Amino acid sequence: MNRKYRKTVIAGNWKMFKTASETRIFAEDLKNSLPRAKRCSIILCVPFVNIPSAIKVLKDSRVAVAAQNLHWEEQGAFTGEISASMLAELGVRYVLIGHSERRQYFGETDLTVNKKIHAALKAGLRPILCVGETLEQRELGVTADLISYQVKAALSGVSAEDMRHIIIAYEPVWAIGTGKTATPEQAGEVCGTIRTVLRKLYGARVARGSTIQYGGSMNPQNAERLLAQADVDGGLIGSASLNPSDFLQIISAANRE
Ligand code: 13P
Image 1 (cartoon, rainbow, N blue to C red):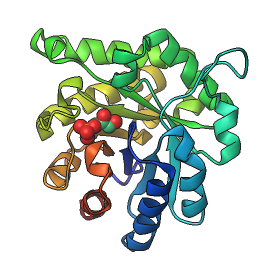
Image 2 (image 1 turned 60 degrees about the vertical axis):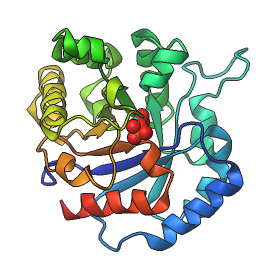
Image 3 (image 1 turned 90 degrees about the vertical axis):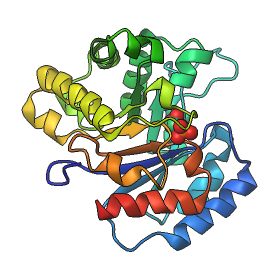
């Protein structure tokens, strides 16, 4: 990471775990145990229905609450969907867009990811754009091309000014939920590739100031080494974010690094 130019961000993605009452207990625990050092921003991406509980407990803390998805239309006949303005009104600050599980299981495409980025920005939400290659794509040697394409497609039509509000998370699909982490060098290399794409699209200043996270089996044991990479500005953490002590240890690693 490079704190001189950009923010370090540690985000937990709970996926489809925890009820509202479990959220309240976790959020209280987290709030009361946060380290004093404020060297990284902290985000919790909770299931939609847990957002009010999380916000109630965390509203006066430095932990921001995020959603894990949204619909790109402002409103309409889209049964079961949630719009950006619904989230914004609740006090949600960030939203995950294009997580690989949504691409894999729910038909998310580069086009819908792009539409969602625009919808989020319009409502004042900050997107956390997720990109990543499968094992097959890595073995075929197309990782850099594929990630560059995913980033360019997702950011189509996004201005340099809006890019300042976007976080990018590099999450290799083969490392998610598998216990198989990218090596610090692999993570650093792809995050560097993403920064190069941003430089070409938006210029050196925006690229230098953009936060790029790594996600995929990050845990208290490997966080510090991953975060030591110059282009890795934080983590998007799945299973280790479900346990307050593990999540806090990763926050402490980000503060130390
Ligand atoms: P794990 O940390 O459980 O591998 O999940 C990573 C992830 O998908 C975060 O969005």
